[in-house]
Every structure is written in structure tokens, then in C-alpha cells.
Length: 440
Image 1: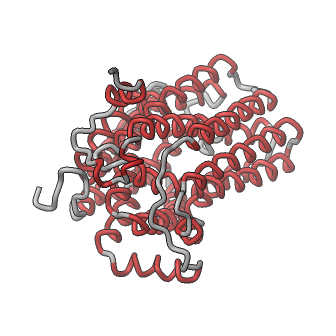
Image 2: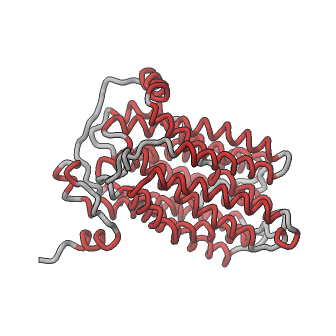
Image 3: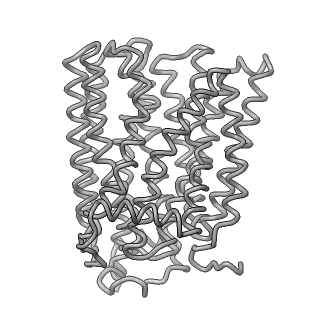
């Protein structure tokens, strides 16, 4: 009798030789293939939605198209990124009480769809300051909803799939994101120009909201068995527990430090884009080149980094940090050469390489934190690390913004130095990946 289609498809995409299904409840162990495909599909659809509300690119153009004051631009990234991370330590006690946690992700996806639909209405009906306030308000709702989904996704990943598979799922989702980014980027090339009407952005946002609804439907079909849950912890004890984890759990503390140093690949691209706009091409078609570069990076690198993370997520983080720093230093050197600095291709090419390194960084650290803990300990690790990173991101953003007053190149070199330090700190982390041990 032929194997079900889901198992054949999962077998073609995923190498599960290192996976130990015995660590999962029997009902979930039998559903690994279906759970794998559903998580890849849901996260791919979520990434489509993320693309159309990217604060570094699309929302910046959107504010300009609606005539919102430029001051609003500086609030986009802090609201979206820190807003989706900082609340997680407060959210953790409520999630810990749930025996089934996939519905947290589903609820977050639906709320993100509502927020983006609201943003589409704002874009189509308001201009100037009112549009800016409306966009930031709906972005705040999206960030809070994203906090719930982001937190739950890693927890559910650990509950529904065994070690040895989790990194590949993240990698395949990155490949799906790459296809989506290339598609959206090519669409921007077709509709683009220097003056894109707000109505065009509104329809783009409607498409993003639809993608989140579909993602929620796909994710709701995951098979998750009731797991460890705790009804006793409240918000105050959660905060105390978070501080205790950072104080007493040395491996986890080093992971948070390593993740902080990996920000080189996350914070460098906006400076590359800023330098590119100084060379011209700031219209929607210019934006498309960077969106496409991001997509190509996920498409070509997602599966590679996913498999590498299942072998050793620690080593993957080291490679990602080292590559990011090398790319940044090489780029800064190139900008000092007049013949190279004026090459239009230099900027999207650098963005592409940084996106490849950032894909490795994201997949490596996501896989590491899921493999590091079990049960509610994993839940706490995810919440505390994300909340800490939200605060660190605000600090790092302020520091790099200050450095950028001396020039974008200064900020880039500072980030490259932090990435180099990340290689050293990551080497002190214990191995947690399937088939690895501290003796390896």
C-alpha cells in the first residue's frame, strides 16, 4: 500500500534520519509529516503578509505615498520589532496555562489580518498626519498580535516535531518566503514608478491580510497533543522568573548574548539601503530590487541553513555572524572606491548577501532555543529571550543611530565588530542539536 501523499512529500523535502519520534506523544509522532507540511505552509503564508508590512521598505514608501510627515518613519521599526518582542514575558504565564497552544498562533494570525485590513482602510481614506497616526496605530495592533504568534510558533514547533527536523522546517519556510518575496518584488517592478498612488498600496495590504487568514486556517489543522501546563504562575512571578533565568542559567544567558551580537545582519541592511538612495533610485522600482534580493536569499539559502542548523545550530550561528561581518567590512571598503561606490548593482548585491547571512542567523537561533529546553522551560526560554531582545534592539538601534550621525559607514563597522565578537561568544554555547554533544 502506497504511503499517504503527505508522507511522500515530507520524505522528499525533509531528512529525518536524526529525528527521534519517540520524544513525542504517539498521536503526534504519527502526524510528523502532516505537521511538517502545515507549519511550512502556514509560515510561508505569514511571510507573505510580513512582506507587505515590512517597516524597513514597504511601510516607509507607504508613509511617503500618503504624505505623512517624515518623523513617523523613525517609529516604524521600533514599534513593529520591539512591540512584538517585549510583551512576551508577560504573555508567557497565560500561554503556560494552556495544554494546547496552537490556538494562540491562530488567534495572533487573525488579529494581524484585522490590523492589516485596518491599515488598508487608513491608506485608502486618509492623508498626512492622520494617515501617519492611523498606520502607526494599526502597526501597534499588528505588533502585539505578532508577539503572540511569534512566541507560540516556537513552542508548538517543539511540541509537534522532533529534534533533527525543526531546523529544516524553518529553512523550508524561508524558501517559501523567498518565493513570495520574489513574486511581490516583481509585482512592484510592474506597478512601480516614482509616484505610486495610495490605492495601490491599499490593495497590496488587502492581499497581505488575506494571506494571514489562510495561514490561520492551515495552522489550525496541526495535530498537537495536550502537554505540560501550569495554572499557578502570574505576571509578577513570571517577571521574577525571567530575571532568575538570566541570572542563574548560564547557557541560556550566553544564548541571549550571542543572539544580541547576531543583530549585525538585521541592523546593517537599512544602512545599505540608505546609501543606495544617495546614489538615486528611491522610487518603488528601486525598492523592488531589495525586496527581490531578500527573496532570492531565502530561496537559495533557506534549506541549506535549515539542514545545517539540525546538524549544529551553534555552528550555524557562528557562520552567520562571521559572514555578516565579512560582508559589511567588504561593502564599506568598496564604498571608499569611487568606481565601485557608483555601481548601482553594489547595493542590492550587498543586501542579497546580508540577507543570506541573516537567513542563517534567524534559522540557527530559532532552532537553538527550541532544542535548548523542554516543556515549560522551553516556553520560558522563548518568552524571556524575545523580551530581552526587544529591549536590546531598542538600545542597539539607539547606539547605531548615534554612530550613523558620523556616517553610515561608521555604524556598519560598529555592527561588524559586534558580529565578530558573536563568533567567539557562540563558541561557548553547549551543543544541543540532534546527534551532537558537548564532546563533539
